Amino acid sequence: MGHFLLRRVGQGVLVLWAAFTLSFLLLQVLPGDAVLIKFQNPDLGLSPAQIAEMRLAYGADTPLWQQYFHTLFAMLHGDFGFSIQAGVPVSEQLTSNLPDTLSLAVAGFALAVVLALLLATLANQRWLRPLSRWLHSVPALFISLPTFWLGIALIQLFSFQLRWVPVINPSPLQGLILPVLTVAVPISAPLAQILLRSIDEVQTLPFVAVARAKGASENRILWRHVMRNALLPALTVAGLLLGELIAGALITETVFGLGGIGQLTQQAVNNQDVAVLQAVVMISALGFVLINLLVDALMPLLDPRLHTLSGEAR
Image (tube, rainbow, N blue to C red; front, side, top):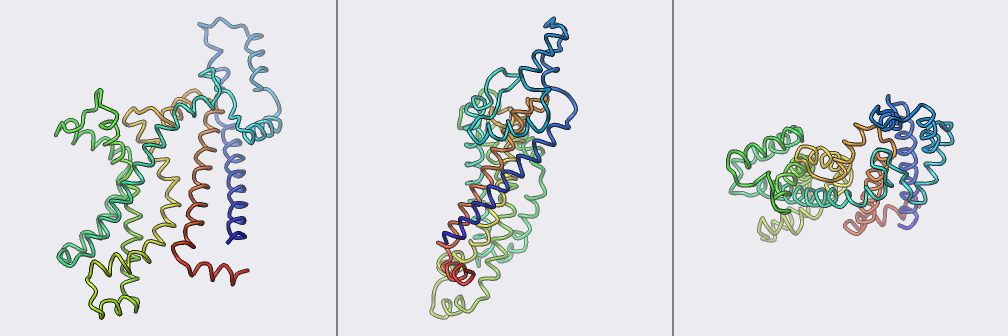
């Protein structure tokens, strides 16, 4: 198990390095220049010589390979650079904006898990068998809903039509209700699809027939025997959905005008603030790697057979 996790950590480091390299190169070829966008404003009255000094101070004219290694080594030490537009270190912007995004993402993911479990449970209730086919089609509907459209539709329904959730000066809790729903619904769809398929497969296994022959109730069979085994594929998919969850959170923050990494990214794109964009990419990649490492560590605890398989592989 230790060798397996060590190998996964090594793969995670390679993923982070690849994400850094690709994002660095792509951001360098983007049209525009953050230094010129800020300092070539006629209202500032800066001369070409002064603008050239600014470019030199920010390292904008240094060779590309020097910028690459300087940025890489700085990030390894926790230094994300300096935001040209905001005039503050990028780490300060992340510190002030990241908690809002994390709270939205965590709450959205928790609600997505609840929705997926609820849908899978209802689809396997005997008294709802006539609706089983419709319940199995609900995830396909959820996954087809664009995040930005869903957010606008929820605002229109719950804020303007029903007037249940205010969008103007809401309380902190009220301000999270619709954004969390917007994030959770599309994420719950693939989780529910995998869970429903896994439940159908596990129910055909012999141990389920044995439990049913012993007189166990359907709910006991579902939660004690079937769900425990069916959760393993869903757990793997949950880790892979982190990237989509973060992307959905960024779009949702923009739709609802929330402070967070989404707003920070939007401003950085408008101003060509490369340092901020690079930091956002790396934070997202780091979160993706850490979540998948956590899933890899939890899988053998939930399925003891993986200990045997890892031992045979060695």
